[in-house]
Image (cartoon, rainbow, N blue to C red):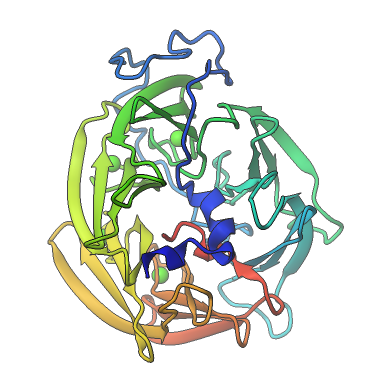
Length: 394
Ligand SMILES: [Ca+2]
Ligand SMILES: [Ca+2]
Ligand SMILES: [Ca+2]
Ligand SMILES: [Ca+2]
């Protein structure tokens, strides 16, 4: 049963939340070649830190997957064209749209690669790297070891133009999709994660100071480990409420289904939280975010049961209380037969919402935390497209 998550259908997700492949240690190269951390040996203690310990006060953070900058997650779907482009379809999510005046943009950006093997596939990494409270359209290309960023074509529908390229990390060995605002300045920091000696090494380009550091945090279990174990890395999430994201690693053990979250300080590498939550065999693990509204990230597991609704288990990490909410059709075999949980704050109140994308009618549904839990929906995309909000599930 557990292998069902390892289907071609899910392959595109792997490149994003960066299920870790076996890695080979090679010399580091990146945006800061003068670093003394180049090619740091496994197990080497890296204590020299240049990042400021204090988060800039009042830094505001953009909303996840909000390309239009209105503070709400947009309704975005992707098409992976075999050995060709990735097509993005963004339906804007404004506060008070006039009827039939919704913004829709459709453009090609990034390479889908081989849909069976994943060869040549870009990682999908859209975030707000420049701090303008709008998500940039962004991919990481392994063959070039480069982040490619573009500004969303808000004003016109004439396509998309490359805005900047950021050489960072090593596409041959590093894993992407673990970006976060690790210094709390409101800008996402470029992040590459490399396995060295069974340890995860986080290479982070701190946006506030444009300096580079490496943090060791988390153990790595090979995809081929016996008995079956796996490691996934998620985007950063703020579990301490200081405006700086923590590092998030998840280890899975198939026999029991145990899901162990490891949350670490992104400056010191010290452990912050260790938590078992959810079950690999029946649940989607969702990248942690604040679902309760206290500004502190929460753990989320979405249980899939044959013939029943999905159950959204949200663990308030501040109080350790867990709520259960039935929402969406289950996909018990993890093959895309039901609704897909999607991440984001769709009503713009600062809390992530319980939300799914229903492929059968191409509609996003969410429970509005801003409007007394009312059910809201928005159609977006064409048949067979993949919701961007499903990236970052495992
Ligand atoms: Ca930052
Ligand atoms: Ca924090
Ligand atoms: Ca919370
Ligand atoms: Ca919300």
